[in-house]
Image: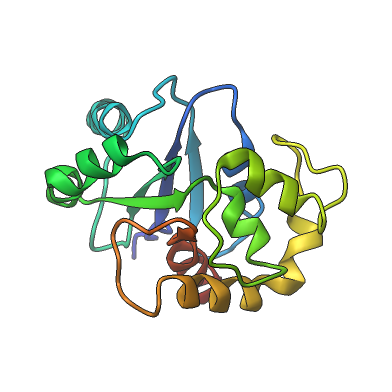
Length: 192
């Protein structure tokens, strides 16, 4: 009798328990028949803390299988902070790769991914400025609300705009504005 192979699991770790925006967004992809998504809460708010938390969590709670296609992602804002960018550039990404973990960065924040669904921009933002611009497209935008239905028909445009912001370079740490969320979304759409 042949044993059924489980479907791949994609683990998502993101900053802080109060901010649910990223988890709410990625939860919408969990209706796939070809993979399963696990959204893990954390109190951590910095990339180093998130990596440490993810490694400990996975060691205690998960049996990862590369052959099945399990993947681990840490969704993290750079907040256009030089110190944060330096920490990330000085070996943090390599540490994550050794543990089979992929960082997914947005600069200044995850909402640049949402804005990219509507416009292409190279304007350098603070998080507050970005949210003000996003409000022009998603009226009365608030964090921790599900906007997936308003965004899903524009996903191709968001992917295209995100790639243009990075000038089609494979950048681990995106400039401001920029995000590599599109890489994860492309993976999820391909695997559906």
